[in-house]
Length: 432
Image (tube, rainbow, N blue to C red):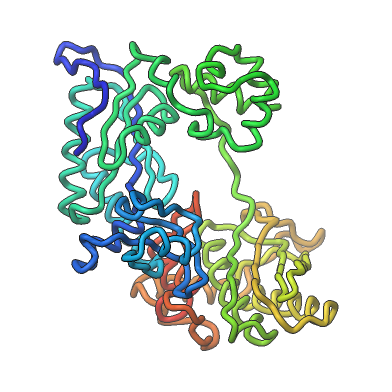
């Protein structure tokens, strides 16, 4: 573990305080690949979404970074900078399983407050001495190393608020531990660039510059109402107060949509195969819809053609969540796009289920009252239960071909961690 930078004295007499902790794994995908293959332990590694020479880098280990490789680079660029680099196709199913192992390990010590992504978690430590908090981090690190292997490391931050803890976790990577103590604040933030503060996006940097704010110190020296005006919302004031160590309450967010998308392999770019891919993606989205106990009342099918045109079509319908109904509606909608556009070459397809409501929000006919759930809804719940019990797709609708490109399971999206059951929602290994 890296030596903590500028640690305050960790005295046993230090009073108990409310602390937040944030952990951020170091180049998680790439280091999982290195750990799982002994031949890669001393090699630079990059992870790509597809196993093609035209793919881009979505993660790279610290050896690769030292050679100048960065996320978003094309494979050819990365190879030019680092000729001995090894590329690995992203194995989302493996990363998801590792994520759930991480949660289990941490919760032997302390509850996880929120998993922000597959490799980022926040923890409310409540009231404790800082020396006890540091000892807790060391114990968690030791257990994670035993469960995941020594190459899969995480950096930890401890501070008064979750935002400050996240910034601290980024301050001494890899395998770091940084404490932002109240008596050192806000001076510890002055050397941090505005772009490195979570919540300060590129567009907000432009607004801040227009307001004459070019440094973090300048942002901290504003008044809350000034920050609110620059942001154009209360989010600016919330961020300012969190940077000053104040806890702010956020309104609960309501789930509004469920969706999946896919870039099609060349052999799947015809209408028949593109429609089949949409059916597979719909199965995934419908299963997530049911898992969160929602019904959908609208959906959007969208495509990108080989000529670069983006086409979309919306449908509204009575509240449903079963695969039978949604497959039919999606197929009709996609057929409408094909007929209207007369296109036959599709590069990308996506399905979005929205207008989501709970069962008690379904309004029935004026005379009959709320409708009974159809037999198809009950049937898919039986399918979900059996698939979850056996942790594989023992029941599914149809027999789709495997999507080309290696692993076709549920993909990891920022802010949404697929459940274990999502990995076998469709197909033998899960599709998505």
